[in-house]
Image 1 (cartoon, rainbow, N blue to C red):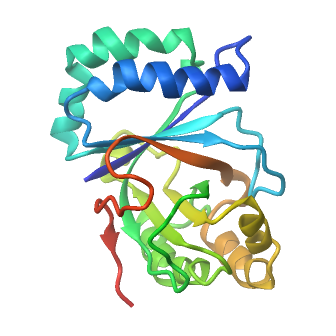
Image 2: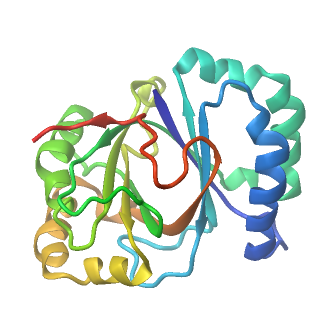
Length: 244
């Protein structure tokens, strides 16, 4: 299963509020949800949040998360009339498509001690680029064996996904990002508490600095809005679950 992340930014002159409203209530419902190959689709709408991990200069105001069965169905989706004559044609009306970032990943569900059945609230998505001199294979192994277990001990964390860029991302050179991490919390205050915790500052942050290029870490806090698929209280079932 491909778990795709598409970071989008408003076209020049469009406010964040108008951008997010058009995306959620026009583009997603009128065009994107009609692409037959898409199995699940949600939109993460950015919320104001200080003290984000990594660099926070991204102009993007939301993330589309799309689930597709494999590369063949992904290609079919890009060749469909629903995409070419619908979603693609609509993009210039609301998005600065030249700023779009797309990362195709394989997702890994990381066990969380404080997990609950309800993942509503605030989600932190972080883009990661591996540290210079680190191979893709070492990044993938270390991210799951050393780094992710530490992240999963953050106070108040409800769910944790660590996603790896798929092999096809390296077919013609270096991938823009090697990983995407997602953390769910009950609310913004819970996220803020976790990021200010001793565990994050003394254990998670040093582990991330050893794993990733600190200048290529970008985060975005958001609330999620399902368009196709399960509600926020249901597991979408698309991630590979790691066992202790």
